[in-house]
Length: 269
Ligand SMILES: NC(=O)c1ccc[n+]([C@@H]2O[C@H](COP(=O)([O-])OP(=O)(O)OC[C@H]3O[C@@H](n4cnc5c(N)ncnc54)[C@H](OP(=O)(O)O)[C@@H]3O)[C@@H](O)[C@H]2O)c1
Image 1 (spheres, protein in one colour):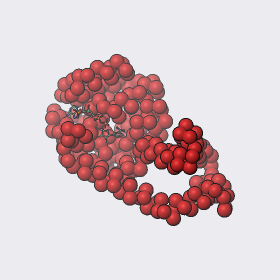
Image 2: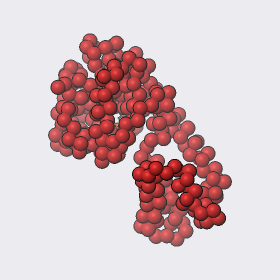
Image 3: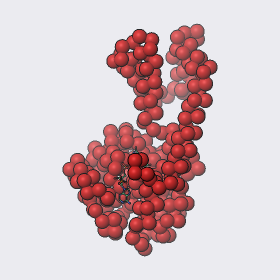
Image 4: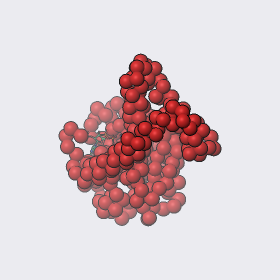
């Protein structure tokens, strides 16, 4: 069986390798990166095969995963050997449309986009997938199979992909916990208890919602007694423009994703 080849051996590749190792995923995996030290580290941590030559990595591939930063994608694709056989390529790069990817390599390459998160290392991730129109239906199963090894898979139209990308970041959850805990500390709660209360408030509620069959709207209704404290907190937050702040943050993320996808990577990115 031809290996799945990761082009780029950075953070998301390491997280995916950890998730695949946890799932005992049995398709051979191979990583190419321009840093020998990263390849050494990935071999050591995940027992994965590595290849320092891009051409040799691509020649062996059954499926390519583009796992370099968005600003490095054009350079990587320009360095690729000529591909004359049908091959599947899945880009993890934020903000780079399928149309642009398709233009860069020849017609035998079938493209899809995937957006996993580093949480996939625990086997609890979610990955959005968008397939190009020419992507063979039978081969979609191979892509689904790969990403569902470490979590759920959500197929979405490419037109929604960037909105998904900016919304689906585990760091937004960490940010919400940090903001809630900071507010609690200002009220006098000690740091440890503030983080415990904030983490449980957010995580337990979400777990209960995802695990049960109750809508978010009715959970909000049940949990916030009219005239009670939670209702007062949420009403004050809403009056201060809570949803507008979130929408503005997401718009800033979307603009950044699009800008990063069009400019070459700077050395400190
Ligand atoms: N990190 C995440 O949580 C996450 C989640 C979902 C999707 N993604 C997407 O996944 C992609 C990778 O992100 P990342 O955070 O894993 O990036 P990263 O940690 O910077 O890893 C990318 C690796 O690819 C190497 N590379 C770049 N150009 C190369 C080339 N031409 N030939 C060989 N190796 C090359 C980089 O080397 P240099 O450092 O020298 O450039 C680096 O070692 C991004 O497009 C991102 O949008 C990331």
